[in-house]
Image (cartoon, rainbow over all chains, first blue to last red; front, side):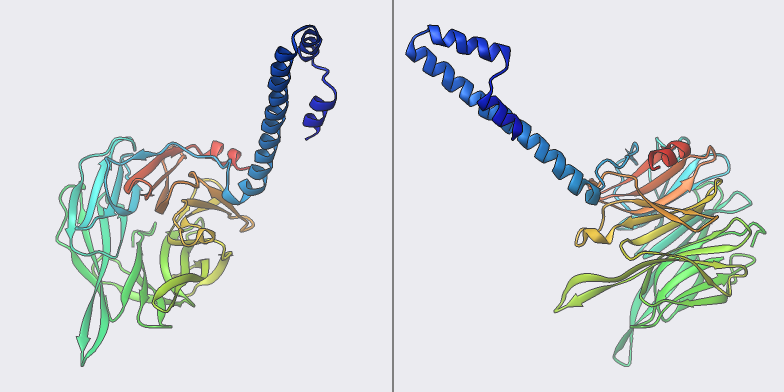
Length: 199
Length: 194
């Protein structure tokens, strides 16, 4: 706003002053055209300045709320895989494995470097509610997964939850799942862990 | 060791801790009641052979058949020496909500907890992932946004790679794909947030 007032009341720009001097020697029509052009410029430039200042204030005010300026890190897609709830591990040999839910069950993919991933391999078919992937001390990987069903007894529906585990030595062939938990509840999430003592 | 968050009807939410020597036969050794629905859990072995459990709690408020709010978003960190008795280690304020949580013990002096989302963005709570650094020395917590706020994402799974850098896999809901951040260099990560 201050810039705008200065530009209107005190044309101290050399070129502008020169134009004003030159305009006094030209015809009234030319002078009107030049004056209207400079009048327009005097409105546009301060206007731009005004809105850029306003924009900065806006970013300053709302940026905090929106986390503008927080750092981002490179992101790569895993083979254009459509899936949910990835469970990521790094194996002892340095390779990576991700287990994730799909509409058909549980699948895994492996990578040597974390950037290029193998074709997806389906491990478990069925409706899965949660899963957890760990590498055991013997080098094999264990996948625990939960599911539940609703059964009706005496006309009253109630959930029955299950947790099963499956093991693999190479991430390719997986053992038949073994049920380890069944109970009268829905299972939200599970988290599997092998302790340092091996249990 | 297996942690299992269960729902057995209104007001009957529990996290059960099970223990097994052979991976086939499991015994319940601990039970932790939760105030709200225990959505996400993450169990790890801590720095001193202790057990740490992160729990994401909350309940959707449904009014006249439609979801209107999320009640009591809360992240609790619990500590145990034996898996049977659990003490509160830290509580993260209700301004965050992560249906999936992932806790790791880093080689540095921090635990890292990754969350799906931020409840302040309701009804679009999938902006994230968010990482919380938890200092082991004083339990202080620092929140860090690691992706653009315009990228809808959820369910982060974080590890510390053998080279020390962090790696995060998550649902990229902007593109409906599984995505990874292959390498977040640890020292640069800390420096960028100081």
